[in-house]
Length: 552
Image (cartoon, rainbow, N blue to C red; front, side):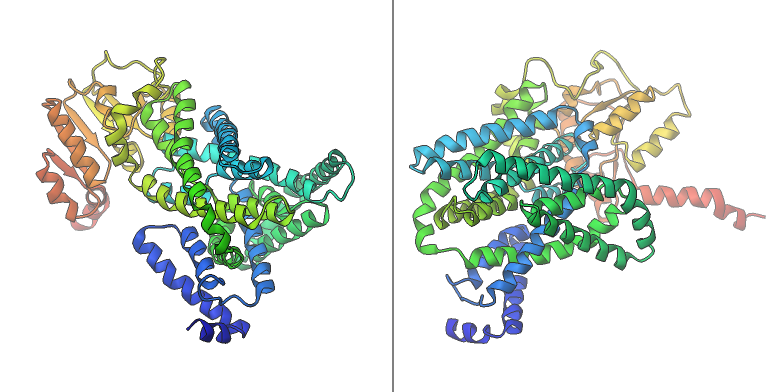
């Protein structure tokens, strides 16, 4: 069968058809296994490469598509570079991001030396281990609706720091790769000057050219998307011509559009294109892997994978614990760095291109990527269950200073009502409660920005998460006559009611259900009443407007 596939793939159109067919099949398998596409794309590269079916024949075409894919990826990263996220979570994002990069690279370097790798190879391996996958983490946190949580914002914050670090590393690597015998320091200086010029062009465009141009182009979303791709590739090409990697130019192109009011439209339309083109990056990578030499790297790959899966989260736990964050917040944020990213593979590819590393080292880093991305996906998906099991052991990482999440002392206060979750539905309930000042209530929410905003308005609110087993230890619930939870997750609501029962709570509990099938289950678990936001909205509409037509 291999010979037949190889013969059919001799025609580029048939070759690409076969590759995309394998991609669709592996994508469906990944969906069943709950694996991100990146893992399946790496497997795809191996399957269509010489190690299995040897389908890849048009290597130049695939390499070109791979370069465009990397440029689009870096463009989207730059497009989403929102420094306000770092500001919103304070210095924790910067200190955790830099601290994790420094400690991971330092320990990874010494592990590499201990395993017998050269100093230069150990450096590349160590640096590759420091970068976590922004794409995977954002996707998983979004699916779990935890992007706005404190640990989600902290994770996104130090991922931004990592992205900035990897761009700087790529600039330096490009300068080293361009060194043709002259002084390396002079080459680095030249590259940095070129980088500043490209940055100046980006900033000038951001200020004077892109706003009016994007307003004009936005009349046609297709034209706006076309302009974004052209701008990304133009600056990527300029980056190459000016002496450093095109990835840096693409990143700056995205950053120049990050302040545009159309960035979300551009990003949403480019995500599918990014995923499609990245497929060819991993096909290109897999087709060049030599499994005759990778087999010898299995043992060190397992060692480095264990270090990333366990060491990286522990580093984050230590740093955040020392800064006064609770063990739960630190643990959930730490799990997000338990893998290496697509940038690690791009970084390794650049190292191979300039002759600093060998195919064996590239294969080693790829194996670590496969292992850590695959396992960490499940770690993040089941992070709360894992925390429940490990919670008693994590107390050593919690500082005695007290947690930053609760900077107000409410333990000695009492309230008539406690409202958990002040999103759209919860905030409406709060507005209704504000009409009755004789009712005292305490709000609880897991979005630090919401907490900050409510406190600025003089309202009583604390940071807390309904999934946190320790939530009841943080709020004075015993004297409250009512507890209203607007969390619509059935499992979380059931566990929350069970916790209240164990604590001997005697008041009435209101739960929230969005789907009809959840009503009976929540009613059986002990809720006094199950609220339906849609049903209540319909009743309000009827009382306010429909009655006008039915009464004479």
